[in-house]
Length: 304
Image (cartoon, rainbow, N blue to C red):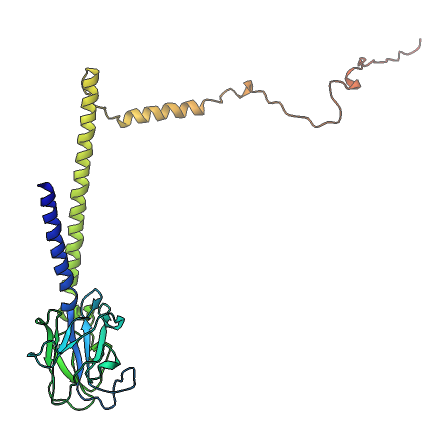
């Protein structure tokens, strides 16, 4: 029973993951730019010019567009199947791929089996099931070398452009506004920014205060529990430590000072022995072995 339950959960998760991966792959593709009449514009690998369709991958995973379909008529959704096994059909994340609607399929997987022109202006990208429309667009009447493109890339805003960007972003046509500039337009005086900054700082201080207070209380309770356990183990009561007053510290400091200052009061009791640098030893010197005679006083008496 447990094995069946685990198998069911695994199967359900696998289905969900497969659906999410599918949702992040082919359904993130968009027709991003279309040219109907190409007289002096983008060329294929053979140097030929023709109508082309740019597909963009809006997702953040690589997408292999193989086995999807292109059509210029929804009554024939499987008009051109993109062949598999060609590495050129893999679109990196947030990148582009260009298909040529020139009817020359022998030139490779990126060449459709039908043509687009000023008369045939509808194009649709169909999912591998041959039914679901991933994206489609009817191009308005445009002149040669003009394109109908999304600006910015992948958006719902379409425009006719004289400048073409096959295999590249269309954002070069749009004026990019930074987030700072947008915020400046909303808050020209800076009051909102100042208030927001102060609120963030006060909120952070309050959070830190609560955290440190909680930690302090927790540590205090832990110490009290340890003291209670120790007292119970010894069969006694918890003895709270008394705080030592400032007078006690002063008395101890005074006693130590007096002890250190009175330590050398009797300097006469200290004997210092120093080395004498002499070539001879005073103990064996002969001059110390001679007897000193007392001084004689000679008195001269006058003759009688």
